[in-house]
Length: 255
Image (cartoon, rainbow, N blue to C red; front, side, top):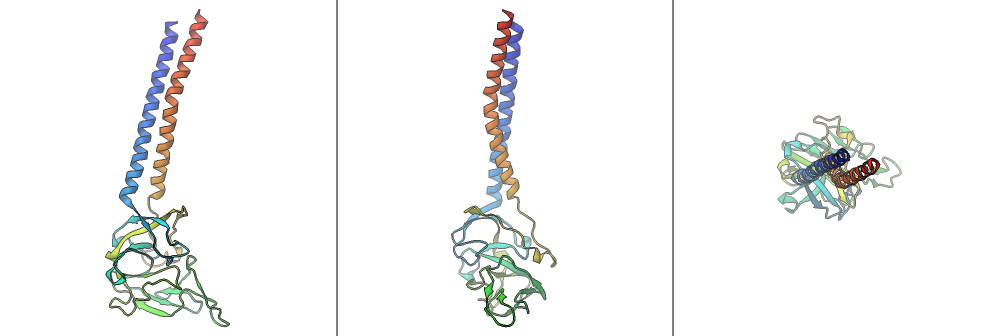
């Protein structure tokens, strides 16, 4: 009878140990995931519909803090530039230093260094033309040479976006310094609309496209932490109760 009691106590202690370990690891993952995300990402509210349909006015986005040497063509970035009103703005990078950006080719597409870019994310303009392209990536033609260290930026809503095309007559030819970029938008957090992909049309150009951010890994750590905390909290009392029942049954059998 005393042996059975010790077995029950042993199971209870082991259950408590495993429970505490699971909760501790869960807390590390949960808090670590949140801490990691807080260091890497910053939330922004998009003020206009110039990036529609990719990002709508009023959307809350998560943007990864990056330096200017991490910017690639196709990135949706948050930047601030005095010539653009000195407030955070969200646009897409279509050209980097040394690029020649033009629109439109015979099929109505944007070109970078003569290479046509398919832009499925763009709210293309329906020209209603009887000849030539029916839809265009920009309502007006333009050509711009991007100075070294600068970026050429367009909105995805090309009919209304006030972007580099509006500033073509400025000293920088519509471009902004790479150092003006504060972050790269990785996901629409609210209303939840998932990750913002990297346009593969730019992948063949020198430098390629940027790699995915660590948001999925951070979310995975947070979710795993929650699961471990809940499982550990439930397992300890359950294991102790099971051990006591087994001990009681064994003692009753001895009697």
